[in-house]
Image (cartoon, helix red, strand yellow):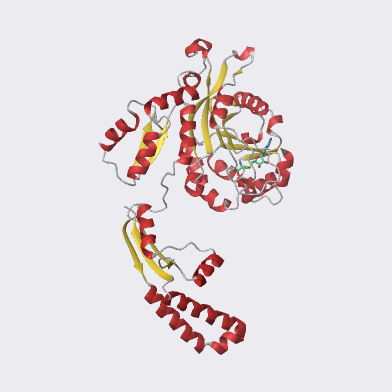
Length: 448
Ligand SMILES: C[S@@+](CC[C@H](N)C(=O)[O-])C[C@H]1O[C@@H](n2cnc3c(N)ncnc32)[C@H](O)[C@@H]1O
Protein backbone atom coordinates (compact mmCIF):
# COMPACT_ATOMS: atom_id res chain seq x y z
CA UNK A 1 0.00 0.00 0.00
CA UNK A 2 2.88 2.34 0.73
CA UNK A 3 3.89 2.07 -2.97
CA UNK A 4 0.41 3.29 -3.97
CA UNK A 5 0.70 6.34 -1.73
CA UNK A 6 4.28 7.04 -2.84
CA UNK A 7 2.90 7.37 -6.38
CA UNK A 8 0.07 9.66 -5.20
CA UNK A 9 1.99 11.88 -2.79
CA UNK A 10 4.32 13.67 -5.20
CA UNK A 11 2.92 17.17 -4.68
CA UNK A 12 0.93 16.90 -1.44
CA UNK A 13 -2.13 18.57 -3.02
CA UNK A 14 -5.86 18.36 -2.33
CA UNK A 15 -6.22 16.59 -5.70
CA UNK A 16 -3.88 13.85 -4.47
CA UNK A 17 -5.72 13.61 -1.17
CA UNK A 18 -9.03 13.07 -2.88
CA UNK A 19 -7.63 11.39 -6.03
CA UNK A 20 -9.99 13.61 -8.00
CA UNK A 21 -9.47 16.47 -10.45
CA UNK A 22 -12.48 18.32 -9.00
CA UNK A 23 -11.11 18.08 -5.46
CA UNK A 24 -11.26 21.82 -4.75
CA UNK A 25 -15.02 21.94 -5.26
CA UNK A 26 -15.67 18.60 -3.59
CA UNK A 27 -13.70 19.46 -0.47
CA UNK A 28 -15.50 22.80 -0.14
CA UNK A 29 -18.84 21.02 0.10
CA UNK A 30 -17.94 17.80 1.86
CA UNK A 31 -15.95 19.34 4.74
CA UNK A 32 -18.92 21.02 6.45
CA UNK A 33 -21.10 18.00 5.75
CA UNK A 34 -18.68 15.57 7.41
CA UNK A 35 -17.84 17.86 10.34
CA UNK A 36 -21.55 18.24 11.07
CA UNK A 37 -21.86 14.48 11.66
CA UNK A 38 -19.22 14.45 14.41
CA UNK A 39 -20.16 14.65 18.09
CA UNK A 40 -19.23 17.84 19.95
CA UNK A 41 -15.46 18.40 19.80
CA UNK A 42 -15.37 20.86 22.69
CA UNK A 43 -12.52 20.02 25.04
CA UNK A 44 -11.94 16.50 23.71
CA UNK A 45 -8.85 14.55 22.61
CA UNK A 46 -8.94 13.38 19.01
CA UNK A 47 -6.85 10.81 17.16
CA UNK A 48 -6.89 11.37 13.40
CA UNK A 49 -5.71 8.38 11.38
CA UNK A 50 -4.56 8.83 7.76
CA UNK A 51 -4.62 12.60 8.26
CA UNK A 52 -2.89 13.38 4.95
CA UNK A 53 -2.15 17.06 4.30
CA UNK A 54 -4.62 18.05 7.00
CA UNK A 55 -7.87 18.86 5.21
CA UNK A 56 -9.65 17.80 8.37
CA UNK A 57 -6.83 18.27 10.91
CA UNK A 58 -7.19 22.04 10.78
CA UNK A 59 -10.89 21.92 11.58
CA UNK A 60 -10.51 19.31 14.29
CA UNK A 61 -7.77 21.41 15.91
CA UNK A 62 -10.01 24.44 15.77
CA UNK A 63 -12.50 22.89 18.17
CA UNK A 64 -10.85 19.99 20.04
CA UNK A 65 -8.51 20.27 23.04
CA UNK A 66 -5.84 18.19 21.32
CA UNK A 67 -5.40 16.30 18.05
CA UNK A 68 -2.90 13.51 17.33
CA UNK A 69 -2.56 13.39 13.54
CA UNK A 70 -1.05 10.23 12.04
CA UNK A 71 -0.04 9.47 8.46
CA UNK A 72 2.67 7.28 6.96
CA UNK A 73 3.60 9.58 4.07
CA UNK A 74 6.33 12.06 4.95
CA UNK A 75 5.34 14.68 2.34
CA UNK A 76 1.70 14.71 3.47
CA UNK A 77 2.58 15.00 7.14
CA UNK A 78 5.15 17.72 6.43
CA UNK A 79 2.51 19.81 4.65
CA UNK A 80 0.01 19.15 7.43
CA UNK A 81 2.54 20.35 10.01
CA UNK A 82 3.52 23.43 7.98
CA UNK A 83 -0.10 24.50 7.62
CA UNK A 84 -1.44 23.64 11.06
CA UNK A 85 1.22 23.23 13.74
CA UNK A 86 1.04 26.97 14.54
CA UNK A 87 -2.36 26.31 16.12
CA UNK A 88 -0.39 24.58 18.88
CA UNK A 89 -2.73 21.81 19.99
CA UNK A 90 -1.59 18.91 17.84
CA UNK A 91 1.06 16.25 17.66
CA UNK A 92 2.03 14.90 14.22
CA UNK A 93 3.19 11.30 14.01
CA UNK A 94 4.58 9.66 10.89
CA UNK A 95 3.65 6.01 11.27
CA UNK A 96 1.82 3.13 9.69
CA UNK A 97 -1.49 2.87 11.55
CA UNK A 98 -1.15 -0.91 11.62
CA UNK A 99 1.97 -0.51 13.79
CA UNK A 100 0.63 2.19 16.16
CA UNK A 101 0.43 1.78 19.92
CA UNK A 102 -1.24 4.08 22.47
CA UNK A 103 -2.18 3.54 26.13
CA UNK A 104 -5.73 2.35 26.87
CA UNK A 105 -8.40 5.08 27.23
CA UNK A 106 -6.35 7.82 25.52
CA UNK A 107 -8.91 9.44 23.21
CA UNK A 108 -12.53 10.61 23.04
CA UNK A 109 -12.85 10.45 19.25
CA UNK A 110 -10.98 8.60 16.52
CA UNK A 111 -11.46 10.21 13.11
CA UNK A 112 -10.47 8.70 9.79
CA UNK A 113 -11.55 9.84 6.36
CA UNK A 114 -10.62 7.27 3.70
CA UNK A 115 -8.21 5.05 5.55
CA UNK A 116 -9.82 1.70 6.32
CA UNK A 117 -10.21 0.89 2.62
CA UNK A 118 -6.41 0.80 2.44
CA UNK A 119 -6.21 -1.99 5.03
CA UNK A 120 -6.72 -5.73 4.54
CA UNK A 121 -9.47 -7.46 6.54
CA UNK A 122 -6.88 -8.77 9.02
CA UNK A 123 -5.33 -5.31 9.46
CA UNK A 124 -8.78 -3.76 9.84
CA UNK A 125 -9.82 -6.22 12.57
CA UNK A 126 -6.55 -5.78 14.43
CA UNK A 127 -6.80 -1.95 14.20
CA UNK A 128 -10.45 -2.07 15.35
CA UNK A 129 -9.41 -3.98 18.45
CA UNK A 130 -6.70 -1.42 19.16
CA UNK A 131 -9.09 1.50 18.55
CA UNK A 132 -11.48 -0.01 21.10
CA UNK A 133 -8.63 -0.02 23.61
CA UNK A 134 -7.47 3.55 22.77
CA UNK A 135 -10.93 5.07 23.18
CA UNK A 136 -12.60 5.98 26.46
CA UNK A 137 -15.82 3.99 27.14
CA UNK A 138 -18.59 5.72 25.11
CA UNK A 139 -15.91 7.32 22.93
CA UNK A 140 -16.64 7.69 19.20
CA UNK A 141 -15.16 6.32 16.00
CA UNK A 142 -15.86 8.17 12.76
CA UNK A 143 -14.82 6.67 9.43
CA UNK A 144 -15.71 7.32 5.81
CA UNK A 145 -14.90 5.00 2.91
CA UNK A 146 -15.43 4.50 -0.82
CA UNK A 147 -17.68 1.46 -1.14
CA UNK A 148 -18.24 -0.87 -4.10
CA UNK A 149 -15.92 0.94 -6.53
CA UNK A 150 -13.50 3.79 -7.13
CA UNK A 151 -14.97 7.31 -6.91
CA UNK A 152 -12.19 9.73 -7.82
CA UNK A 153 -11.21 10.25 -11.45
CA UNK A 154 -7.44 10.29 -11.02
CA UNK A 155 -5.58 7.68 -13.02
CA UNK A 156 -4.27 4.73 -11.03
CA UNK A 157 -1.76 2.38 -12.62
CA UNK A 158 -2.36 -0.11 -9.88
CA UNK A 159 -5.03 0.13 -7.26
CA UNK A 160 -4.78 -2.06 -4.19
CA UNK A 161 -7.76 -0.36 -2.46
CA UNK A 162 -10.38 -2.64 -0.87
CA UNK A 163 -13.77 -1.42 -2.10
CA UNK A 164 -15.91 -3.16 0.48
CA UNK A 165 -19.69 -3.01 0.71
CA UNK A 166 -21.19 -1.07 3.66
CA UNK A 167 -22.40 -4.40 5.08
CA UNK A 168 -18.84 -5.72 5.10
CA UNK A 169 -17.69 -2.71 7.15
CA UNK A 170 -20.65 -3.13 9.49
CA UNK A 171 -19.90 -6.76 9.98
CA UNK A 172 -16.11 -6.47 10.32
CA UNK A 173 -16.14 -3.59 12.76
CA UNK A 174 -19.11 -4.43 14.97
CA UNK A 175 -18.03 -8.05 15.41
CA UNK A 176 -14.67 -7.18 17.01
CA UNK A 177 -14.58 -7.37 20.81
CA UNK A 178 -11.86 -6.03 23.06
CA UNK A 179 -11.53 -6.90 26.75
CA UNK A 180 -9.74 -4.82 29.39
CA UNK A 181 -6.85 -6.31 31.27
CA UNK A 182 -7.76 -8.44 34.32
CA UNK A 183 -6.70 -5.81 36.88
CA UNK A 184 -9.08 -3.26 35.30
CA UNK A 185 -12.04 -5.59 35.56
CA UNK A 186 -11.94 -7.42 32.23
CA UNK A 187 -14.93 -5.53 30.87
CA UNK A 188 -15.57 -6.26 27.18
CA UNK A 189 -16.31 -3.57 24.59
CA UNK A 190 -17.39 -3.37 20.97
CA UNK A 191 -18.58 -0.72 18.51
CA UNK A 192 -22.29 0.07 18.07
CA UNK A 193 -23.40 2.03 15.02
CA UNK A 194 -24.77 5.48 15.86
CA UNK A 195 -25.32 6.29 12.21
CA UNK A 196 -24.18 5.31 8.76
CA UNK A 197 -25.10 7.33 5.70
CA UNK A 198 -23.91 8.26 2.24
CA UNK A 199 -22.05 11.49 1.71
CA UNK A 200 -24.58 13.83 0.13
CA UNK A 201 -21.92 15.97 -1.56
CA UNK A 202 -20.93 13.02 -3.77
CA UNK A 203 -24.58 12.27 -4.57
CA UNK A 204 -25.24 15.87 -5.54
CA UNK A 205 -21.99 16.63 -7.34
CA UNK A 206 -21.06 13.25 -8.82
CA UNK A 207 -24.32 11.25 -8.68
CA UNK A 208 -22.27 8.83 -6.61
CA UNK A 209 -24.00 6.99 -3.78
CA UNK A 210 -20.93 4.98 -2.84
CA UNK A 211 -19.25 7.31 -0.39
CA UNK A 212 -20.39 6.06 2.99
CA UNK A 213 -19.55 7.27 6.48
CA UNK A 214 -20.14 5.85 9.92
CA UNK A 215 -20.27 7.18 13.43
CA UNK A 216 -19.79 4.38 15.95
CA UNK A 217 -19.58 4.35 19.71
CA UNK A 218 -17.53 2.17 22.05
CA UNK A 219 -20.06 0.37 24.25
CA UNK A 220 -20.02 -2.43 26.80
CA UNK A 221 -20.51 -5.92 25.44
CA UNK A 222 -22.11 -7.47 28.46
CA UNK A 223 -22.23 -11.24 28.03
CA UNK A 224 -25.42 -11.36 30.14
CA UNK A 225 -27.07 -8.79 27.89
CA UNK A 226 -26.57 -10.70 24.68
CA UNK A 227 -29.35 -10.44 22.16
CA UNK A 228 -31.37 -13.25 20.66
CA UNK A 229 -29.40 -16.30 19.54
CA UNK A 230 -26.15 -14.93 21.02
CA UNK A 231 -25.75 -11.94 18.68
CA UNK A 232 -23.95 -9.00 20.27
CA UNK A 233 -26.31 -6.34 19.01
CA UNK A 234 -29.90 -6.22 17.83
CA UNK A 235 -28.59 -5.00 14.49
CA UNK A 236 -26.44 -8.12 14.09
CA UNK A 237 -29.44 -10.23 15.05
CA UNK A 238 -31.58 -8.56 12.36
CA UNK A 239 -28.90 -8.70 9.69
CA UNK A 240 -28.24 -12.38 10.28
CA UNK A 241 -31.76 -13.62 10.89
CA UNK A 242 -34.98 -12.00 9.74
CA UNK A 243 -33.29 -9.41 7.57
CA UNK A 244 -30.52 -11.41 6.01
CA UNK A 245 -30.06 -10.28 2.40
CA UNK A 246 -31.84 -13.39 1.15
CA UNK A 247 -34.65 -12.88 3.68
CA UNK A 248 -35.19 -9.30 2.50
CA UNK A 249 -35.28 -10.32 -1.17
CA UNK A 250 -37.89 -12.98 -0.33
CA UNK A 251 -40.08 -10.35 1.37
CA UNK A 252 -39.65 -8.05 -1.61
CA UNK A 253 -40.84 -10.80 -3.94
CA UNK A 254 -44.09 -10.87 -1.96
CA UNK A 255 -44.59 -7.13 -1.36
CA UNK A 256 -43.45 -5.72 -4.71
CA UNK A 257 -40.26 -4.30 -6.12
CA UNK A 258 -38.59 -1.91 -3.66
CA UNK A 259 -40.93 -2.72 -0.76
CA UNK A 260 -40.84 -4.81 2.42
CA UNK A 261 -44.15 -3.66 3.89
CA UNK A 262 -47.79 -4.64 3.65
CA UNK A 263 -49.31 -3.69 0.33
CA UNK A 264 -46.00 -2.43 -1.08
CA UNK A 265 -46.46 0.24 -3.76
CA UNK A 266 -50.27 0.29 -3.54
CA UNK A 267 -50.60 1.11 0.17
CA UNK A 268 -47.55 3.37 0.04
CA UNK A 269 -49.13 5.44 -2.72
CA UNK A 270 -52.46 5.59 -0.88
CA UNK A 271 -50.91 6.67 2.44
CA UNK A 272 -48.18 8.94 1.14
CA UNK A 273 -50.67 10.80 -1.06
CA UNK A 274 -52.57 11.76 2.12
CA UNK A 275 -49.65 13.97 3.15
CA UNK A 276 -49.96 16.44 0.24
CA UNK A 277 -46.21 16.63 -0.13
CA UNK A 278 -44.81 19.41 -2.24
CA UNK A 279 -41.55 19.95 -4.01
CA UNK A 280 -38.63 21.08 -1.88
CA UNK A 281 -39.95 19.61 1.38
CA UNK A 282 -37.75 17.29 3.42
CA UNK A 283 -38.94 13.88 4.58
CA UNK A 284 -37.40 11.67 7.25
CA UNK A 285 -38.37 8.04 6.71
CA UNK A 286 -37.72 6.09 9.89
CA UNK A 287 -37.42 2.38 9.16
CA UNK A 288 -36.99 3.01 5.45
CA UNK A 289 -36.33 -0.59 4.42
CA UNK A 290 -35.02 -0.98 0.89
CA UNK A 291 -36.22 2.47 -0.11
CA UNK A 292 -39.16 1.87 -2.51
CA UNK A 293 -41.36 4.38 -0.66
CA UNK A 294 -38.54 6.91 -0.56
CA UNK A 295 -37.91 6.67 -4.30
CA UNK A 296 -41.66 7.06 -4.90
CA UNK A 297 -41.81 10.23 -2.76
CA UNK A 298 -38.66 11.74 -4.28
CA UNK A 299 -39.77 11.08 -7.85
CA UNK A 300 -43.46 11.89 -7.53
CA UNK A 301 -43.33 14.94 -5.27
CA UNK A 302 -39.77 16.24 -5.68
CA UNK A 303 -39.12 15.97 -1.94
CA UNK A 304 -35.71 15.29 -0.42
CA UNK A 305 -35.81 12.07 1.58
CA UNK A 306 -33.52 10.89 4.37
CA UNK A 307 -34.17 7.20 5.02
CA UNK A 308 -32.85 5.55 8.17
CA UNK A 309 -32.94 1.91 9.09
CA UNK A 310 -31.24 -0.22 11.73
CA UNK A 311 -30.69 -3.15 9.36
CA UNK A 312 -27.50 -2.60 7.41
CA UNK A 313 -28.66 -5.09 4.77
CA UNK A 314 -31.77 -2.98 4.16
CA UNK A 315 -29.72 0.19 3.84
CA UNK A 316 -27.21 -1.49 1.58
CA UNK A 317 -29.91 -2.71 -0.81
CA UNK A 318 -31.51 0.76 -0.76
CA UNK A 319 -28.15 2.32 -1.65
CA UNK A 320 -27.65 -0.12 -4.53
CA UNK A 321 -31.14 0.61 -5.85
CA UNK A 322 -30.72 4.36 -5.52
CA UNK A 323 -27.87 4.18 -8.02
CA UNK A 324 -30.16 2.81 -10.74
CA UNK A 325 -33.34 4.68 -9.78
CA UNK A 326 -32.36 7.82 -11.66
CA UNK A 327 -33.55 10.01 -8.82
CA UNK A 328 -34.13 13.69 -9.41
CA UNK A 329 -31.21 15.78 -8.32
CA UNK A 330 -31.44 19.47 -8.65
CA UNK A 331 -29.27 22.52 -8.30
CA UNK A 332 -32.23 24.84 -8.57
CA UNK A 333 -34.23 25.96 -5.59
CA UNK A 334 -38.02 25.66 -5.86
CA UNK A 335 -39.19 28.65 -7.90
CA UNK A 336 -35.77 28.88 -9.58
CA UNK A 337 -35.60 29.64 -13.29
CA UNK A 338 -33.46 28.52 -16.22
CA UNK A 339 -32.68 30.45 -19.37
CA UNK A 340 -30.97 28.75 -22.30
CA UNK A 341 -30.01 29.76 -25.81
CA UNK A 342 -28.80 26.99 -28.05
CA UNK A 343 -28.17 25.87 -31.57
CA UNK A 344 -31.15 23.90 -32.88
CA UNK A 345 -32.17 22.33 -36.17
CA UNK A 346 -35.10 22.12 -38.57
CA UNK A 347 -37.12 18.98 -39.19
CA UNK A 348 -35.33 16.23 -41.08
CA UNK A 349 -34.49 15.46 -43.89
CA UNK A 350 -31.49 17.82 -43.76
CA UNK A 351 -29.30 18.77 -46.69
CA UNK A 352 -26.18 16.57 -46.99
CA UNK A 353 -24.03 19.65 -46.25
CA UNK A 354 -25.81 20.19 -42.93
CA UNK A 355 -25.52 16.51 -41.99
CA UNK A 356 -21.75 16.69 -42.67
CA UNK A 357 -21.46 19.85 -40.56
CA UNK A 358 -23.34 18.29 -37.63
CA UNK A 359 -21.21 15.14 -37.80
CA UNK A 360 -18.00 17.09 -38.01
CA UNK A 361 -18.91 19.26 -34.97
CA UNK A 362 -20.24 16.28 -33.01
CA UNK A 363 -23.47 18.20 -32.27
CA UNK A 364 -26.71 16.64 -31.07
CA UNK A 365 -29.41 19.03 -32.28
CA UNK A 366 -33.15 19.21 -31.65
CA UNK A 367 -35.88 21.33 -33.14
CA UNK A 368 -36.86 24.20 -30.80
CA UNK A 369 -40.19 22.51 -30.19
CA UNK A 370 -38.59 19.19 -29.23
CA UNK A 371 -36.06 21.03 -27.02
CA UNK A 372 -38.96 22.53 -25.06
CA UNK A 373 -40.57 19.10 -24.67
CA UNK A 374 -37.32 17.76 -23.22
CA UNK A 375 -37.36 20.51 -20.56
CA UNK A 376 -40.97 19.66 -19.75
CA UNK A 377 -40.16 15.97 -19.48
CA UNK A 378 -37.33 16.82 -17.06
CA UNK A 379 -39.97 18.33 -14.75
CA UNK A 380 -39.78 22.05 -15.55
CA UNK A 381 -42.98 24.08 -15.75
CA UNK A 382 -43.95 27.27 -17.62
CA UNK A 383 -41.62 26.18 -20.38
CA UNK A 384 -41.13 28.71 -23.15
CA UNK A 385 -39.49 27.49 -26.37
CA UNK A 386 -38.96 30.17 -29.03
CA UNK A 387 -37.52 29.78 -32.50
CA UNK A 388 -35.22 32.81 -32.74
CA UNK A 389 -33.73 31.95 -36.15
CA UNK A 390 -34.84 35.27 -37.69
CA UNK A 391 -32.95 37.14 -34.98
CA UNK A 392 -29.97 34.80 -35.46
CA UNK A 393 -29.91 35.70 -39.19
CA UNK A 394 -30.06 39.42 -38.57
CA UNK A 395 -27.29 39.21 -35.95
CA UNK A 396 -25.07 37.23 -38.36
CA UNK A 397 -25.68 39.81 -41.09
CA UNK A 398 -24.77 42.63 -38.71
CA UNK A 399 -21.62 40.78 -37.64
CA UNK A 400 -20.62 40.24 -41.30
CA UNK A 401 -21.11 43.95 -41.97
CA UNK A 402 -18.94 44.74 -38.97
CA UNK A 403 -16.30 42.30 -40.20
CA UNK A 404 -15.98 44.35 -43.40
CA UNK A 405 -15.64 47.53 -41.32
CA UNK A 406 -12.81 46.13 -39.20
CA UNK A 407 -11.26 44.03 -41.97
CA UNK A 408 -7.90 45.89 -42.01
CA UNK A 409 -7.52 45.77 -38.23
CA UNK A 410 -8.56 42.10 -38.15
CA UNK A 411 -6.01 41.07 -40.79
CA UNK A 412 -3.27 43.02 -38.99
CA UNK A 413 -4.04 41.27 -35.74
CA UNK A 414 -4.63 37.82 -37.26
CA UNK A 415 -4.23 37.12 -41.02
CA UNK A 416 -6.06 37.30 -44.37
CA UNK A 417 -6.61 33.55 -44.12
CA UNK A 418 -8.21 33.93 -40.67
CA UNK A 419 -10.45 36.71 -41.96
CA UNK A 420 -11.59 34.67 -44.95
CA UNK A 421 -12.20 31.68 -42.68
CA UNK A 422 -14.45 33.74 -40.40
CA UNK A 423 -16.42 35.33 -43.23
CA UNK A 424 -16.92 31.97 -44.93
CA UNK A 425 -18.00 30.40 -41.65
CA UNK A 426 -20.57 33.16 -41.04
CA UNK A 427 -21.81 32.97 -44.61
CA UNK A 428 -22.28 29.22 -44.31
CA UNK A 429 -24.28 29.78 -41.11
CA UNK A 430 -26.58 32.06 -43.09
CA UNK A 431 -26.92 29.48 -45.87
CA UNK A 432 -27.74 26.71 -43.38
CA UNK A 433 -30.42 28.91 -41.80
CA UNK A 434 -31.87 29.87 -45.16
CA UNK A 435 -32.06 26.19 -46.15
CA UNK A 436 -34.15 25.69 -42.98
CA UNK A 437 -31.61 23.30 -41.45
CA UNK A 438 -29.98 25.42 -38.79
CA UNK A 439 -32.06 27.17 -36.14
CA UNK A 440 -31.52 29.10 -32.98
CA UNK A 441 -33.66 28.60 -29.90
CA UNK A 442 -34.41 30.55 -26.74
CA UNK A 443 -35.77 28.56 -23.78
CA UNK A 444 -36.91 29.50 -20.32
CA UNK A 445 -38.62 27.49 -17.61
CA UNK A 446 -39.35 27.33 -13.90
CA UNK A 447 -38.76 24.71 -11.28
CA UNK A 448 -41.89 24.44 -9.15
C1 LIG B 1 -7.28 9.45 0.57
S1 LIG B 1 -6.13 10.11 1.66
C2 LIG B 1 -7.15 10.94 2.77
C3 LIG B 1 -6.41 11.93 3.62
C4 LIG B 1 -7.28 12.75 4.56
N1 LIG B 1 -7.91 11.94 5.55
C5 LIG B 1 -8.32 13.51 3.77
O1 LIG B 1 -9.49 13.13 3.78
O2 LIG B 1 -7.97 14.50 3.14
C6 LIG B 1 -5.65 8.66 2.57
C7 LIG B 1 -4.50 8.92 3.52
O3 LIG B 1 -4.27 7.73 4.29
C8 LIG B 1 -2.87 7.55 4.44
N2 LIG B 1 -2.65 6.12 4.73
C9 LIG B 1 -3.05 5.06 3.99
N3 LIG B 1 -2.70 3.93 4.60
C10 LIG B 1 -2.08 4.27 5.76
C11 LIG B 1 -1.48 3.53 6.81
N4 LIG B 1 -1.45 2.21 6.81
N5 LIG B 1 -0.95 4.22 7.85
C12 LIG B 1 -0.96 5.56 7.86
N6 LIG B 1 -1.51 6.31 6.90
C13 LIG B 1 -2.06 5.67 5.85
C14 LIG B 1 -2.31 8.05 3.11
O4 LIG B 1 -0.95 8.42 3.20
C15 LIG B 1 -3.20 9.26 2.82
O5 LIG B 1 -2.70 10.43 3.39
